[in-house]
Image (cartoon, rainbow, N blue to C red; front, side, top):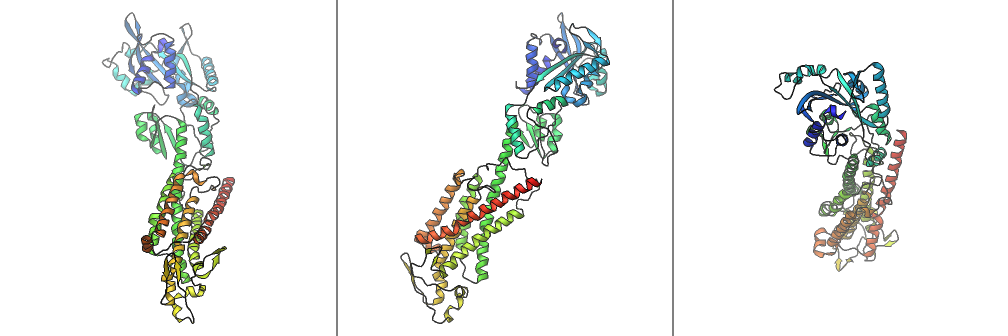
Length: 553
């Protein structure tokens, strides 16, 4: 069979063009040729006819050495799996004879065709790929063809002549090739299934062959996916690669046309790399959402604190320079560190999002508002507590001797000079004694400690809130903070910067704040930490909502 087909020159040409040796189909053929001695000297390729997609035949004119001269012959080979259900018929319909084991030829009748089809179907169902082979000795006008100078060369350039040239063939046989899935495909496909990714097998293989190969990792197409990723390597794959949502060209064995038409190139030709890329893409998307979730919920809290002071009629608990410091310096390191968040433990067990899904939906917006509301309430709340309470949550905060007032007095602070018998005592902050010439100054000059507490609560809450942003749905128990060490480092840096402006006198004067005592720090932590518990509850509800949606689907 090999002696008649003269395939080796074409195979060698293919390998030279691709500059590689790892193509399973052709590697198998060369191994087969090697068992039949050196055929390259005995056969010479003169012309290769263009591939015809209708029946997917490839034909070539080659010479067979006889007494030092080359006698012409037409070799036709057909990868049977490349034309769907009618692949076998397409080659047999072009053949009128079949070559037997003793090299004699006999006409092909209908019973012979059916026998061949049934045998090939049986073998295809076991996952073997098939290369059909046929030849033709009498080339008619193309007899003696050995170069483009041949008088009948124009017939090779005319597609309409292909049918007549590729007719009356002698069917030689088929070569069966074993090309099983790679070992890592099993795990990659299972990962895709858990991630809600539907795998569609679009192949030119014979249907039975494709089913047998797919059955090895239990993969069958049930329905079309919503976001389509197409992989391909050939020129005929280019249109599909172009129109797909994501076109992925096979890098090593793929053609230049496929690479140009694709959005991505698979450098190692490994299917599991695509799965890894999907996981990495989800991580990037999640980290982007984490950054937005942290920044928006924190900023919403600052806005709410300003609105609350205006609604209640009390003095502002934060001044502009403090807000600028928080937004530009204190929040920056944790927000940047969130970009280094590792993948959620269940990143590939969540269903894919739709391409038109909003980045901020109603549930996400609700979470922003809940967290933001707590940030605002806690920031304003500590300001009110300092003025109105001697102790809070069991912590004494009047040890430095300042004067307590009623909430109504705090809300109407501008009328303090008209209040009968209203006096305030001077109090000491660190080495600084704060005195008042007018009782109303207690709500302006005297609010320095309350301002410091409000700023410290805001900073502490935003640091704790950055821990919430480690994962959108997973609890801190499942996704502990040390999984992102950069976040812990950034939190430490932010607290360090905040302590710097508290305890360096020149910086404290710029920001209008004073040092805090141990009891005051304890109160700050107790008012800030609940933001973690609140978000844990929201995460729990979010997980329940997601499971409910999956069950309903």
